[in-house]
Length: 171
Image (cartoon, rainbow, N blue to C red):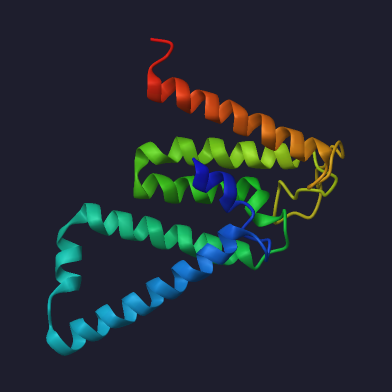
């Protein structure tokens, strides 16, 4: 769920999710090149093994789909594709391909991120690629007092939930 809550901000050049995506893309690219060279030179059968196991192939396809969605999204204006119904559906489908149980958590976390961003002053292009309507309730701003309070309160709630879960306090 934490992936879905931060992935929507991959279109912000200073976001941690974007910086991490760039690192992941470099690692994957280098790994694929090295594996392709190993396959080509030493004929080790990587492609054959992956093709035999449909679960591995499904996960690889899902991860590649999610990475392609993120690569597209990081090059879009902030609060457009990655904050849209289209982005939500594509991310959820790619999560489902990777692990069906993961899809619901991805959807909920992306929806909650988009919903909370609607309260901001900057508009969200929920119906991307359509430019209008763009939605903003204009009740608060990023980095403002409401943002600060919501972050602290939600962090406190999470900490209490974790303590209860770990200690079994309410059982």
